[in-house]
Length: 167
Image: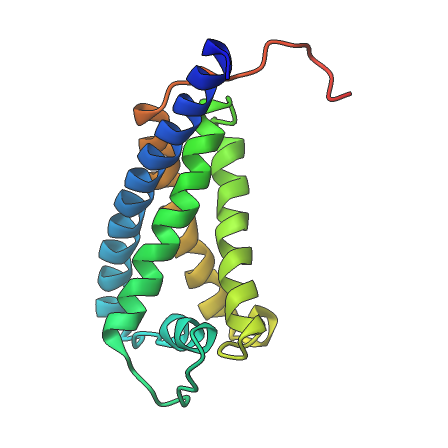
């Protein structure tokens, strides 16, 4: 391995770890604002993330299951995992509002893919519009916070300077 490729590998690994930290900060912000929203709207906690995780692990939780610890594991784990992606984006120059918006879409798509593939959730288009809006808002808070923190922790060291075209 050459020095340049070793250095690139190190920078990628550091960006993934710093992104995970940013993702945890993003989850904390999302959780804080979600609890504030729930205190106003009286919307109950969702345990779909926990039921999806348990299903992936081979368990068969019922719709009435409320496994708090598994909910936290899925909530914080997903935040850290997708934070790693955001750290990688930051080091390669995928930054700013466009990256925040794209990351929000990735977060929404990840959650819905896992929840629907496991049968633990229902497609968002079947939800009341108010719940769709709340879900998008919470995921946007997560992604913007994660992105802002990742961009402060990770410089765009690996941003390509090869040209202005995608081909």
